[in-house]
Amino acid sequence: MKIPVLLFSLMLAASGIAQNINADKSAFAHTFSIVARDANTGEMAVTVQSHWFSVGSLVSWGKSGVGVVATQSFVNPAYGPKGLALMQEGLSAEAALDQLVAEDEGKAFRQVAFLDVNGNAAAYTGEKCVVYASQITGDNFSVQANMMLTDQTVPAMAKAFEAHSDLPLAERMVAVLKAAQDAGGDIRGKQSAALIVVGPELAENPWEEYRINLRVDDHENPIEELDRLLKVARAYDYMNRGDLAVEAGDMPEALKLYGTAERMFPDNLEMQFWAAVAMANDGQLEEAKPIFKNIFEQDENWREMIGRLVKPGLLTLSEEEVKEIQEL
Image (cartoon, rainbow, N blue to C red):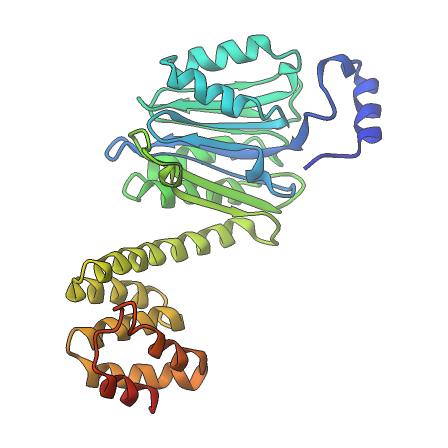
């Protein structure tokens, strides 16, 4: 996400502020974003879109039980980990942000938003951020943008967040991005987007940190792609829970969960396959056979897969029944 050092140096020299920003540490991320909290579940999220490659790799930060951060414009990525650390120590979003802004010699070029686990939000837009640049902070959220086509983007984001309170937080965040784009969005266009969601309690293990962690690094329509990936993520959440049910030997529950995922993506062969496996394990072998047959006709590898499920106990059928499936 870095611009050529020579070009950046010329830009800084021309504006007389080269001493304030280190070209090796700053990168463009002129963008629009939202940090927010679901007052009912306590989940917190940050989502962002920009006409720049891999915006999510620097702009969006979050930690379960602590808060979320969006750091953009001429990005100082240190706001992410440092801001989260300060909020984990007990500082409010406002106090943590104020402390880091005061320490930042390049603050005139920054745009940053913090939100803590209690829903307190704070934002800062430096005076040298490229217009249109502004922010709106409210109860459990902050929306901010810079280098926008019009001055209506940020108000549209705030309105969308309030209007979609019936949605789960992740879907609500995507709705805000869509509203921003509809209002004009980034003057340069579209390229990348990201969404992270963290929980209200500290995570016990690193792999439990994010409830949702999605990035679209380079795409013609990044918000639409992010929306699609969110739907896929929701479906695979049912698949993962189905796997846990299989592990526990609860085939009716597994069948229910796999079936839900399959209905969300009926053309996904893997979802069809595991739903059929759960049916077979639940005594519905005859009903599962047509599903297996259709899958095998599209991809022979799944026929081989069936035989490999017996030894680990993922397919609880007799040798004869397994052979019947493989010969479909």
